[in-house]
Length: 405
Ligand code: HEM
Image 1 (cartoon, helix red, strand yellow):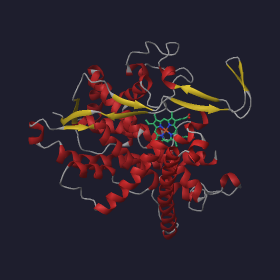
Image 2 (image 1 turned 90 degrees about the horizontal axis):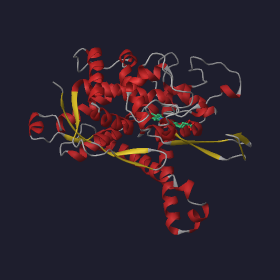
Image 3 (image 1 turned 45 degrees about the vertical axis):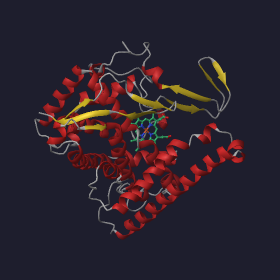
Image 4 (image 1 turned 180 degrees about the vertical axis):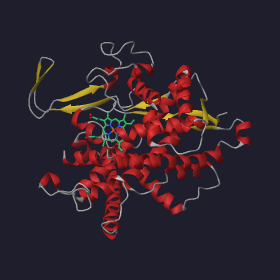
C-alpha cells in the first residue's frame, strides 16, 4: 500500500497535471509533423492516399507519452513508426530511436507474455521445454526492462544531487518518487516508517506498473471513441460545437488546463464509450479472511472477478443501457448508482492513472477534431478488437484524415 500511495501522490499532483497537458500538446505537434509528410499534402489527399491506422499511431503516441511522463526520458516510438512508413527519416538520431524501440518492444513482449505465469502451472513452466522456453524468454526480457529502469533511476538520482536545493526539478513521476520524503520534498516532515523515502526497487516496481498499465489503454479507448463518434453524427455535431465554442476557430494554440475542464461534452463521450464498451472488461479482488457475500460463505483467498461490461450494461442500473447516449452524463444531478460505473475500478486499488488518462483522451479529442476531419475508411466494418478476457485491444482502425474546412 506504501508504493500505491506514493504512486497516487506523484501522479495526481497538480504539477503532474500541468506536465501531462504540456506533453499532450508537444507530442501532438510531433505527430502532426509526421502526418503532414505522410497524409496531409495536397497531392496525397487528391490521390485519396490520406488513410492511416489510427490505432497504431496512438499506440505509439501513448508509448511516448507514458514513458516521458513517468520516467522523464524521451521515447521515440512515433518517430520509429514514421521511419517504417517513409524513406525520409525523422529528425531524431537513429541510435536513440533504435534504443527506445528496443525498450518499447520489450514492454510489448512482456504485456503479451506475462499471463503464462498465471495460467500455466509451475511444473509445466519448469519441465516442459515448450513452456519453459516461453517462461525463460519472458523472464529474460523482464531482466532487460529492469536493468533499463535501474539505469534511468540511478542517472536521475545523480542529476538531482547535482541540482542545488533551491532550484526547481522536473515534475515527472520518477523525480517525484525519488524526492518524496526527502529534504527536496516541499511537504517533508520526519515522522517514521510511513514517511520514509522510497528504495530503488520500490521506485522501479511503480515505474514498471505505471508503464505496463498506462501504455495502451488510452490509445485503445481513443480508437473506440473515434469509431463511436463516426457512427453517431448527432454526437459528432454536438462535440464539434463544444470544441469550436472553446477554440473559436484557433486551430493551433496549445490546449490549456482550463480548456480541459471546460470540455464537458467530450468528457461525457469518454464516459459513455467506456460504459457501453469498457476496454477493461474485468478486475479482481480477494479477501485474506473468510467472508460472506450475497448470502454465501466464501473461504479466505477466494478470487472474485468483477464483470465490468455486464455491470455497465445492466438495466437495473442504467436506463436504456444499449443506447449510446453521452447526454445521460450531463443531466443535472446525474450520478451513476454506487459501484455501477467501474471504468477505473473502485476503492483503494482504483486506477491511479485515471486523471492522466482523462487528460490524454479529452485533450486529444479536442486537438484532433478542432483541426482535422476524421472519417472511417469503412463505415460498415465492425471495430477490430481482440480481448484476453481482461483488456480489450483495438488492433486496427483505418481512418481518412484531412484538414477541416
Ligand atoms: C483509459 C485508460 C485507462 C483505463 C480505462 C484504466 C482502467 C484501470 C482499471 C479498471 C484498473 C483496475 C482497478 C481496480 O482493480 O480497481 C486499473 C489499474 C491500474 N491502472 Fe489504469 N486505466 C487507464 C489508464 C491508466 C494510465 C494512463 C496509467 C498510468 C500511467 C494507469 C495505471 C494503472 C495502474 C498502475 C493500475 C494498477 C493499480 C493497482 O493494482 O493497485 N492506468 N486501470
